Image 1: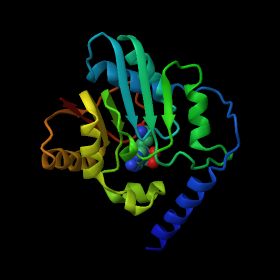
Image 2: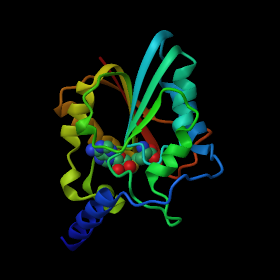
Image 3: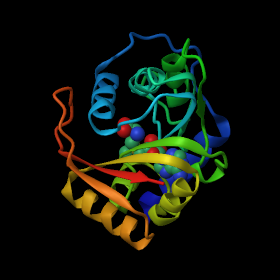
Image 4: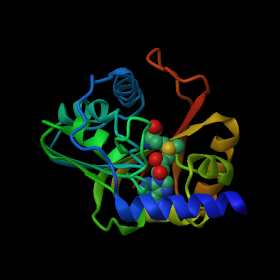
Length: 216
Ligand SMILES: C[S@@+](CC[C@H](N)C(=O)[O-])C[C@H]1O[C@@H](n2cnc3c(N)ncnc32)[C@H](O)[C@@H]1O
């Protein structure tokens, strides 16, 4: 209870003040992007089309944006790639926010936008949706520092599905979360293919990951 009060208060303060050092300039780290490019190549088959729109949900600082950008850009002439992150103003110890770091990662990528917003406020439809590690149980959300009121996996899943034109990839961490994801999909009566364990020699993560493909 006290922790939720603390998370709610901190979240409110950072969302209102949007405090951050500006113009983050760092060294581009490629490990997350290489992983994302690899898993998309293996598990997310798409066909060439003139215009493609993609939504990444819960983009954090979007250090992996180039993996998505390079993957989708090779199969279209015009790419719109949007990322949405509800907690974009969380600060790193160097006093740059996720938002500032994300701005650095998307710099010079044409057609890429990062929205510091709640997924529920997104109303545009997208051809493809990528959702890496949604919060399907409350403990990781609380540890992440979000107020409990933002724990609404069913509502978020239904909303994401309502925005989907073609295909969505959901990746979960660990067997337990993958099981919960399955129940959420079943309960929402959304058709899916379970991809099993996501194998990548580019993985930098200690926990196993599992995937679901949702197609319209
Ligand atoms: C476990 S993290 C995964 C981050 C990133 N996708 C990755 O793979 O590294 C989940 C992210 O979803 C964000 N998130 C949670 N609820 C959200 C919502 N309603 N709208 C947008 N982002 C949300 C969190 O703030 C967090 O950054």
